[in-house]
Image 1 (cartoon, rainbow, N blue to C red):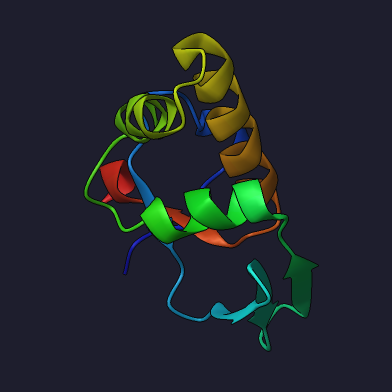
Image 2 (tube, one colour; image 1 turned 90 degrees about the horizontal axis):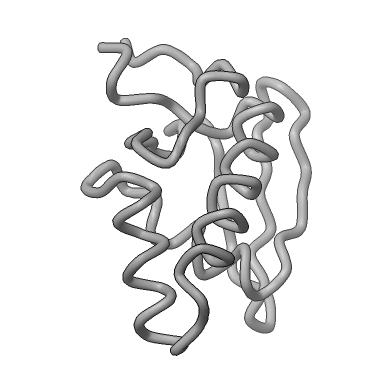
Length: 102
């Protein structure tokens, strides 16, 4: 079993994935999250929805941030800060797993 992500442990080098118990559905470009076990219900804005689709455990948050910054031609430092902040938020709600804690 992959442990839940302690929110304080999330950094740019973290490789996280979505807990399998968390269901998500796209509604008009925004992702809605739901976890029946914890009662988590959260609507992500379009930017967070893009990040959510990248959290498959194949890349660090820094790698995801760099790719998103390149695609959207945005400041990499700012994007990385936003990516880590969003992961911290989702981690604190129990929606993520940290693959480094295996």
